[in-house]
Image (tube, rainbow, N blue to C red; front, side, top):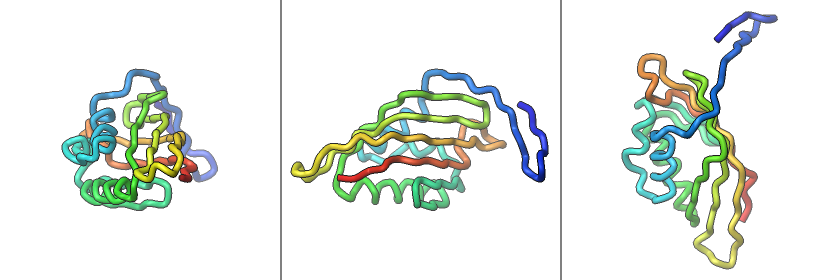
Length: 139
């Protein structure tokens, strides 16, 4: 990885490897898909932050509860990994999520997702910052 300063902005070059998604990521999505919201969230540090769409959640428990509240709006999710790229302290995920409304009169939607996971410097097995986008979604 190379870091340069260019016109007051940091420019970083990073090698990314396309690989199979790690167990922690699959366990995290499974917790959401199964609506269990348990140990899969242990991939986050206690003080992790998440910016998912307009959400601005601070701390593992707020991330867990924010996602639970979103899912509880009346649908079931099924996440699918399309690509996973590992760049050391940065992990990038691209996929889709099939969102099936509880109200069967509404259509199933399958928006695309892109997520950036920045790992903790002290414990690189944990996510410190999560930036993600899903959508657009419309039932």
